[in-house]
Amino acid sequence: MWIEVSALVFPKLFLLIGTVSNMLKSICFMLISASRANINMRFSKQNNIADVQGKATSQFIGSSLMGTCLGVAISKFINIGALTQMYPAFAVLSVIFYWTSDRSIRIINEVYLNNQ
Image 1 (cartoon, rainbow, N blue to C red):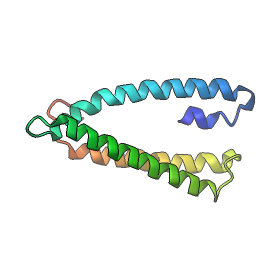
Image 2 (cartoon, helix red, strand yellow; image 1 turned 90 degrees about the vertical axis):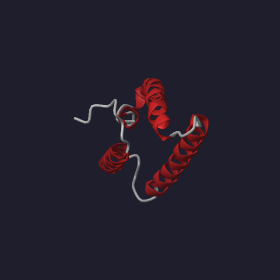
Image 3 (cartoon, rainbow, N blue to C red; image 1 turned 180 degrees about the vertical axis):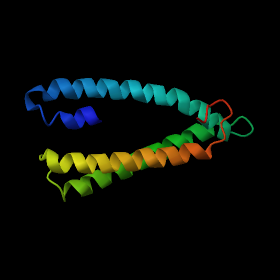
């Protein structure tokens, strides 16, 4: 996503930068999906992994939709064409995302992950 935001710096390369960043996001999504299945298995009881996976996907879609709505609301208050306003807003939202992700991962008692 940082690559996507930096496309504003190079408007002549916007299509190339956007394409590369979307390819990289797709690769990351596939890697996340593989590890997420193992995490969701820890929540399944009595062999109901499909139910857990379906609910996790619903939560992911719901949180993505809320994030999109938040982004649209924030874009009303900042000039998204000015990098001096765009980068700080993106940095703050990224820190919030990584902090909340870290807090949620710490809840899971995973015996196969190295806690360090």
